[in-house]
Amino acid sequence: MTYHIGAKPGEIAETVLLPGDPYRAKWVAENFLENAVLVNEVRGMLGFTGTYKGNPVTVHGTGMGMPSLSIYVNELIKDYGAQTLIRIGSAGAMQENIKLRDVVIAMSATTLSTPSRGIFKELNFAPTADYGLLAAAHKAAAGKSIPTHVGGIYSSDTFYDERPDLNEQMTRHGIMAVEMEAAELYILAARYQRRALGIMTISDHLVTGEALPSDEREKSFSDMVEIALEAAFA
Image 1 (cartoon, rainbow, N blue to C red):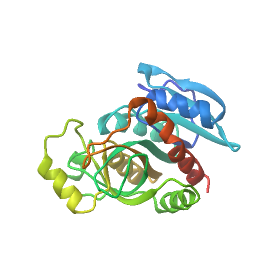
Image 2: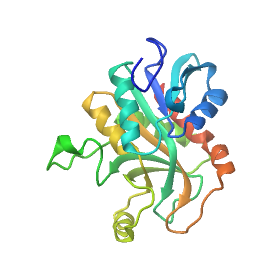
Image 3: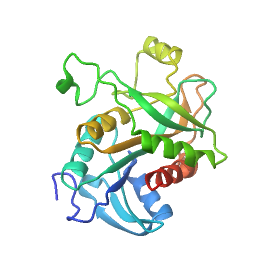
């Protein structure tokens, strides 16, 4: 047990899927894993462990934003031995060619600030995905009908952003989408020599103003979860 995870030793798998929403973790466990059991509910942050095609998998919520994710990923790696960590979440598109429900696979994650910023001081560290996972996810996505995009994303440390000038530059420089967690996940994976990847479904669009209603978001995430699971065990 840790401060934030109540699982017993051996109850967390080496492969962990990381949705921000704890109820999305429950949905993934119920719909994609076999024999899933609840292993954590401290502070309402749900975690489940089961199997996918015979492979042990944990799906654990991280909350919103990089500080919250940093807590859970640190503990999952340092106290439970997690080796492969894949963020599955939603994102806002920043390019017109990317549409609602499309899947984005993050090769890199640009950011203004993360909880690890104090370590790097003046250095602009470039957080990137594990190439093996990235390539496996791209291959898994190729067999699906859902449009999939691979490239750079932006991990924001604010949800209610008031920097339209910054968004313009992100779009100008080809950033595909914005979310709030992947950059810190990639940094922690690099620090502890783990594999990490971020796979996101587009739930809203910063350019067109479109957005999926909440009841449709869950139904649109199946492809993303399947891509993550196939990539993890490729």
